[in-house]
Each structure stands twice: as C-alpha cells, then as structure tokens.
Length: 131
Image (cartoon, rainbow, N blue to C red; front, side, top):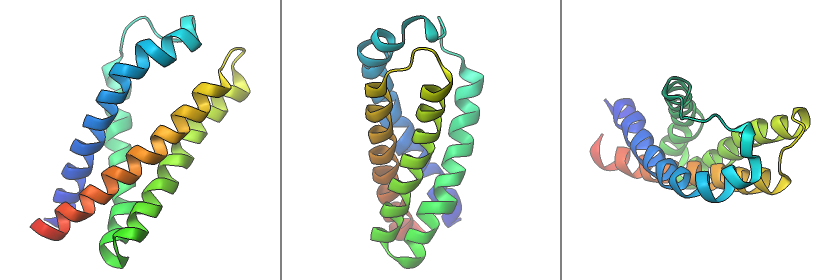
C-alpha cells in the first residue's frame, strides 16, 4: 500500500507543479525562445506516457531510498534524477536541433531538478504519515 501512496502523492504533487510551470513557461519562455519548433497543439498521449514513467522512476530511484535511508537522501536523489532527466532532454535538443536556446536548457534543467526534489520530499512525508 505504501508504494501506491508514494506513486499517487508524487504524481499529484509533480503534476500540479508541472502544470503551474507549463502554464507560465509555455507562453513566456518556450514559445518566444523556440517558436515554430513547438507543436501547434498539446499532445496528451506522449505527455501521459512521460508522467506515468517518470513518476515510477522517481518513486524507485528517489522516494524509495528516501523512505529507507531518510528524507535527505531521497530529496538528493530526486534532485539528481530531475537534473539528469531534464538535462538529457534539453542537451540532446541543444545538440541536435538547429535552434535551441541555451537559456531554455539551463532554466528547464533547474526546474526539473527543483520540482522532482520537492515532489520527492512531499511524497516521502506522505508515505511516512499514511503507510
């Protein structure tokens, strides 16, 4: 049962944080910097697949060690996972696309690091209290 709590709590927190971020960053950061590289409309399928997989990875690599070894370790692992995952996306785009903003990469990597760390910490606390 605790893994269901971990998955759901991380997913809800990370999803809410990312929704707030994307609502701001879409028109203020991504659209001005990336322009026609962006799809004209949101594609739900790939987004849902990402969130389902990313939440599972975060629970396995960050929340689980945080429950076993302390919240500090979990939050650190969450920050590392977020930074590496977002860096993989952004730096690959920067390496392979004709126009990709370095500023977008840096901001996006920082966002992934912070959001994953925060969601991990909250998920650990939820599991500790409820499971």
